[in-house]
Amino acid sequence: MPRIEAPTVAEHHALRRAAILDAAVAVLAAEGPAALTPSAVAAAAGLARSSVYQYFASTAELLAAGVEETFRRAIAGIGAALATAATPKDKIAAYVGGALDAAASGHEPMSVYAAADLPEACRAAVADLHRQATFPLVEPLEQLGVADPWAVAELIGGVVSAGANQVSRGEPLDAARGRVQAFVLRALAL
View 1: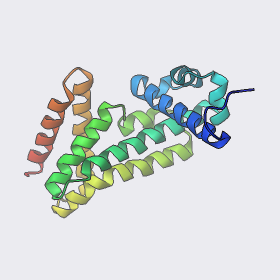
View 2 (view 1 turned 90 degrees about the vertical axis):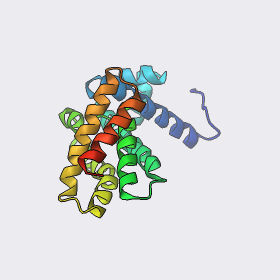
View 3 (view 1 turned 180 degrees about the vertical axis):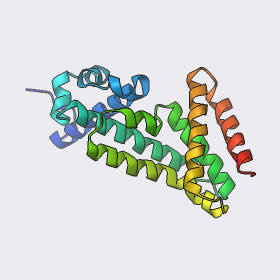
C-alpha cells in the first residue's frame, strides 16, 4: 500500500499534483515544451512515471497543465510587481520588470507555446491567460492615451523577450531589467 504523505488522502493528492506541476514547470523552463514528457516530469519530481499518469492521463494533458501553470505563475509575479505602482509610468516599469523576471524564470513567449502540440482547449486557455497577463500593461498605456495599446503592449513584449534572451546568454537580470525598463519608458516618451 502506498504511503500517504499528508493528514488526508485528499491533501496527499493535492500535494502530489502540485509536485508534478512544479516539476512540469521546471522542465518547461529548462528544456522547453518538446522535453516535457511524463518520464521527464516524474524524474524531476522524484516519482515513478506511473504516478504522473494518476494525475494526467496523457503527455498532452500534462503539457497543457504545465503551460497553463507557467502562465498563472507569470501573472502572479507581474501582479506582485505591480502591487505598489501608482502612476501609469510606474505601472509600465513594474510590469516590464515583472514580465522580465517571469521570462527569466522560464515563462516563454507565446510563440514558443504556439509551436507546441497543445490540445485545442489548452490553446484557448493559453490565449486567455496571455490576455490576462497583458491587460495590466494595456491599462496604463490607455491611461496615457497611447494609440492601439494592445499593439504597443505586444511590441513591449518583444522587447521583454529580447531582454530575457540577454539574461539567458549570461547578462545579469538586474542589468537587463534596468535596460529594458529604460528602453520602454524612452520609447513611450516617459
